[in-house]
Structure formats: C-alpha cells, structure tokens
Amino acid sequence: MADVSDPKINEAYEDVRSSKSDTNWLLVDYESDRSDKLLLTQTGSGGLAELQEQFDPSKASYAYARITYSNDKESQREKFILITWIGSGVKVMRKAKISVHAADVKSVLRVFSIEVPARDKDDLKEDPIVVRLRKAGGASYDGV
Image (cartoon, rainbow, N blue to C red; front, side, top):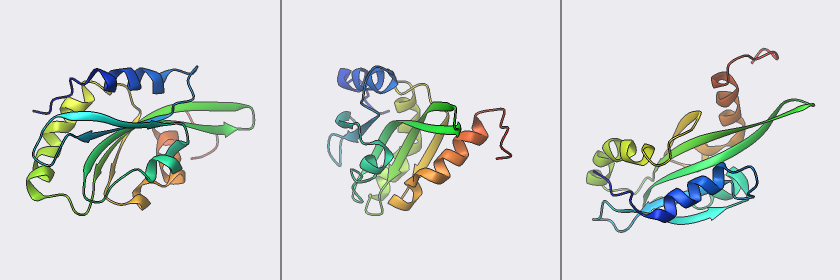
C-alpha cells in the first residue's frame, strides 16, 4: 500500500480542479527509492508541455492535469487526466508495486477522464491525449 496521506496532495488536487486557479497540474513522487510514501513535489500552470519536463527517467511518479481544448471555435472543454509515469531507470521492485499503488493514488486523485501510462516524454504529447479525451467525452459532432 502506498501512503498518500500528505495533505498537500489533496490541496493541490483541489487547486488543479478549480476553474478559478491557474494551477493546471500537480506531480507526486515517492519520498525515496525505498519508501512507499508519496509526497507532492511540484505544481504548475504551464500545461502539459511544462509538466513533461518535470518527469525524471530514474523515478516513478504520478501526475494529475487539467487539459483545455476546443471542439469547435465556440466552445472550450476542460478535462482531467491521471498520468502514471514509470521512467526507464526505475528499479524492478518499484515497477512491481506501481499497479497496487496506483489504486491508492486514485483514492486521492479521484476524478479524471482518462488514465495515461507513460514511459517516455513522447507518451505525453498533447495532441494524441486530446484525441483520446474527445473519444472518451461522449457525443462528437466532428467525426473524431
């Protein structure tokens, strides 16, 4: 079981969810290589492009982000994604625990449209994620 009791995680989650806040992502990392305690390590307002730069290939991390996109020129949508990052240098035992720990993370970062598994920064390109969000969003009048 992962320890997700850090109150800053929930505070940042509420901040990302708030349309009154500029904060549109948060990053949660393990306290250390041997610890199962998760801590809020960063938040930001630069969108997915900024968030991509925060992931470390030697770490496993979780991120939550608000994505804003247009379906047409009159409308804007905001959707939320949960990212499970497993860098290329993550140790085998940490990788083995990720699926169990992800359930604990989801108990705090509760509401999201899609889950995005990522192993390298190419997995976090915005256009394919927006396509997935449109497909998950229900009615689509533009043929996507």
